[in-house]
Amino acid sequence: MLLQLALGFAIGLSLGLLGGGGSILTVPALVYVMGYHPGAAVTASLAIVGVNSLSGVLVHRRQGTLNWQVALVFGGVGMITAYFAARLSHSFPPLVLMMAFALLMLVVGGMMLRGRRAGSAQGEPRGLATTLAAGAGVGLLTGFLGVGGGFLIVPALVMLVGLPMPVAVGTSLLVIAMNSLSGLLGHLNGAALDWQLIALFATAGIAGAFVGSKLTRLIHPDRLRQAFGIFVILLAIYLLYDNGIKLLR
Image (spheres, rainbow, N blue to C red):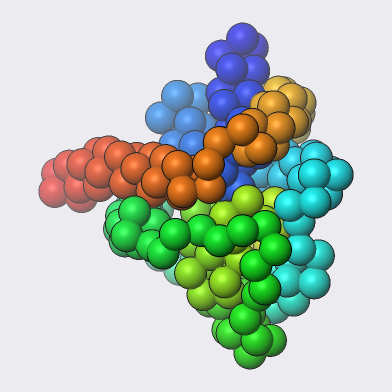
């Protein structure tokens, strides 16, 4: 139970601080630490990350680092594509999905390290068409790979939609909650969920998300972006190594 609480807190802390990283931590934690099958881990991850994200949204709303209009447009179209993409994911072997997950993480991590400098909190987002296209693309990958999408949403909001990093972090949490709900519905095909584990992870995660959301006001936006990119790349390398060995056996 202590291990589950510690992992849950770390997941929530990542979400509140970086606006992502929840599923990147949750899926490997459930598979490699808790011994879950990848399919069950994906479904439980969506439930855990969705609850944690909502708690972070409340803090960011009070801090003024949340763009409701972008979140609803970006997340709304993402929910639609995430639902149908989740259905398609059942046709692929779990190892292949994990490898695709890791490769995508590697690309996005590099983009964040090389990305433009984050603007001020008053930065204006780009047009509706750009927001819709970015939201649909992220929703597709969210449902297909079974992740809340924060590690994709934050870069998309910063580099494509044009939000400054602090606002992208807060906005992404609302989008993650929306996409996680849609993805979860797509994955609920009669599989039993461990509600006790989900409750423990989510409870600790809510506390972590609260702490992480407060810390965003103390760290420079560019440092947040760089930390996010490094974190994603390191975990991607590990997942590629671990799953690559299994595929070669």
